[in-house]
Image 1 (spheres, rainbow, N blue to C red):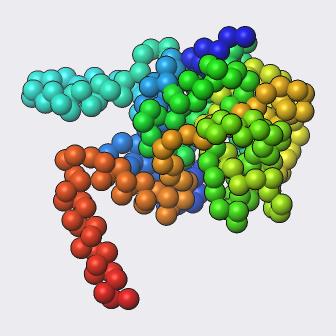
Image 2: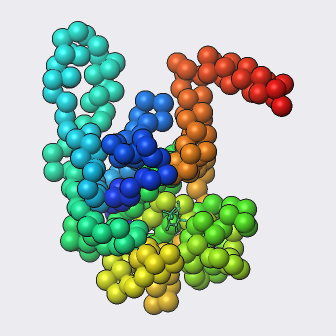
Length: 296
Ligand code: G1P
């Protein structure tokens, strides 16, 4: 079985209603942490992991996202003329090769499994990565690279996973663990957003490496949790059919940028990680925290 992963799917069709009114006119994936849109973090992570083809599953109103990947020739030449090489490098870092990006439309919001299925004709008989841009992960090496390295050994299908408090499991796909090998666990089941009795507290985080057979499972799927076609169910079917599914406890910090609190936390963490900002920003944070505490 081919274990080279060169394609990644980015499901970006969601409406982002949790961030209204901001998302009234901009896709949520364009919202920025410090100075980079969420989608750029996802692309950088994919590139670091060796991904060469980027498949975006989009929907109406996502034009700004498609434009973001166009080369900004006028801007580039004006930066070049004025000798702003640092900015030019930043800008060029966002450029994508012609033909490296494909867009497919998800015509109906039928769930994550359906979004991934929409990309099926662009995939061959090879594994594919999926990155959910809401889950921003600060890690070295980046999370998907850690997974691809582990996957070279394991094959099968792999999800990123982390421990969450028991009361939070209902917001996630949750692994039923057959064998815990430390960083890697083998799953004997997977449940999407269990309302009660979660099989473990190992939550699925938005990074996947899918065996081609997961696409066949998606072909057959009906609605699952929340009335949506769930990727979790298609992965659970792999286990039913006797194929391997693993979870990787990645090293790194994950931010839920699909929630306002998570987005703010990520802004703080990524701000503090920047050399040019960290001193001023840390000082401000400690001052404001002291003020906030004194006022309580
Ligand atoms: C999706 C998946 C879920 C996973 C989560 C990670 O849910 O369906 O299995 O645990 O992403 O962020 P969503 O958060 O889109 O509802």
